Length: 263
Image 1 (cartoon, rainbow, N blue to C red):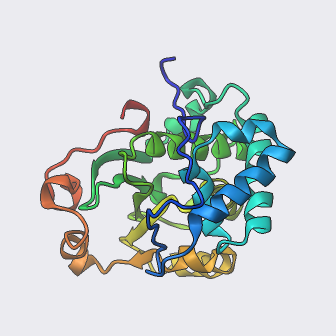
Image 2 (tube, rainbow, N blue to C red):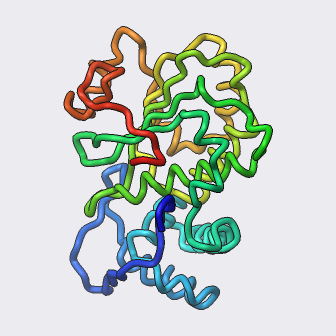
């Protein structure tokens, strides 16, 4: 359907057997007995919600890793996700018509990939204002709409995306604590292990007051993926992870910005 996008939807299952020798490596570099735990987690999930069998092992693995390979905690997280997805996006996706007021703010773009093949999105915090028409609910739908778009562009063999959060022009009129916390909750609770790195650029001093309020709600794994970039080192910092021909023009690269709804 035009104007919709799908993510983490049922796809072909890949089953790991107990004796499979494929090694899976965590972000911390340590090898774990993940195939066995994936099998155990899948068995528990299917007892509680048969629809979970439609999700592949990579999806289950992301939730398992998000809970440090604790099967019970990962199962609870995944079951919460399934329930949320069925109620929040009962048709399986968010349509453009459901987020028109947010799209009108022209604040989220997507183009290019980093050196690891992870898709890149640019979000302009200075263009975000509390949506008086659609309210917080429409903003949450927009967050899901954007994340789904990103995830749909992740190539095979990769599971994460990269975000450039640009705060050029940000002021207290843009401050939206409820919105920030809602977006953070959606990312951490329902899209675990999807964020590869977050570059925060053009940071005004006044933003740090709001940052101190949001920071305690960010989990430790996510905190390690956040990089504040100095203006003088913007292009050089991005180029450590992104080739110049994949960097947006506004940061000295070659790519033009493409609105998220058109990507």
